Image 1 (cartoon, rainbow, N blue to C red):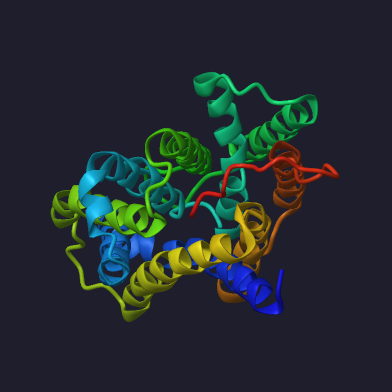
Image 2: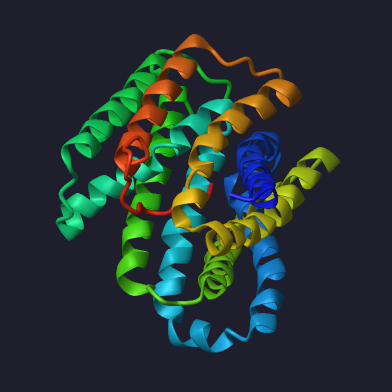
Amino acid sequence: MKPRDLAELLLLGALWGASFLFMRMGAVEFGPFALVFLRVAGAAALLLPLLALQGHWGALRTHWRPIALIGVINSALPFLCFALAAYVLSAGLMGVFNATAPIWTALIAWAWLGERPAAMRALGLVVGLAGAAGLAWSRAGLKGDAAVVTPLVGAAACIAATVLYGVAANYSRRRLAGVPPMATAAGSQTAAALVLVAPALWAWPAQPVSPAAWGSAVALAVLCTGLAYILYFRLIAHTGATNAMTVTFLIPVFAMAWGWLVLGERPELDMLAGAAAILVGTALTLGLMRRRAAPATAPIKP
């Protein structure tokens, strides 16, 4: 990796890690539907002109149905899950749960595509899922500040989001192989915005929203989604999917750091232990702890 590629990888990890911070700062005032709609609509507004400049409108028109489905299961629904969890879970904890996405991707590939993992990768599945289960269990008895959402519900929402990421990754492999990445990115964000526009209008906050919450929504759309997609595809083009995939390990670190620096959310012992187990399991699952690793599934965007 060249120094510029490494800098872009760190920036991407910082942006995707910050997405959990901005969800924490915006979810309560906007509510999940309005916040996620602003996120995907803003990202679509940034990505669609780039798609036109690249001349890939034809690919979007040809493959719009599977791209629209990806927009629902890889953006709209998981973003809603994380926005719900943001009521009661810290930014760092959500980032840790997000790191299980490659593990679910491998499990779903095993169940759906018959891709049986080798022994070390199977061990990684067990270790990673044990870490996620233990972390969720440690939060089960805690009481949340929200009237309906509890920490256990928040943990379950995070896990549901990562399972959806796993489904989307495997579906993309089957239906969108060879489609220009920008067509998938711009089209999926547009589809997610169209799906969410009615629920967002119905659930739009009745009270004025603070400038901080608006700033969080804009940052989620422009920085953590639109710009992050651009950086991610640049890294794949310049360094390959395996190197770009290492951002998976940076996201929870940055998520914990942002939550600590901005919101004073100190990482707790169970979070650190769970993060260690999940990241070791993820590394084993992706084949990154072998001398000669096979190409692995690309990471999922938070």
